[in-house]
Image: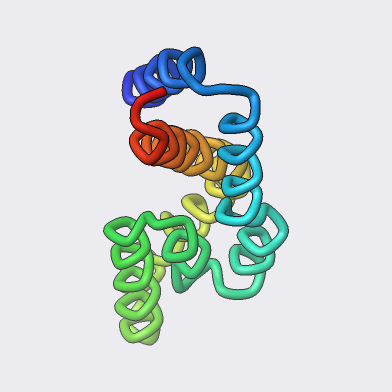
Length: 126
């Protein structure tokens, strides 16, 4: 959470030094590069157990964890051990449904800062 605030502060500082044209360029590039909420929710709905929505949103570590829970859970479900893995995975998926918009906003914020810095450097810091 502190990182998000820090990113927003950096963008505000950079935003103040960018001209209106440069700010428009930043927002245009951001629109082209940011993640789609619809795609994230479709991946969550159809492939959520595999962690596909987290792979899409750049959360590779937790996506791999979800994938391992899914595979091991189903592989051991016949022995009833897998149920103990699949229940937390199901809860995690439900929680993710509410976290997806925040993950997309955080990704957009970090991309906005990176693009603004790139535009600022390319224009000679002006």
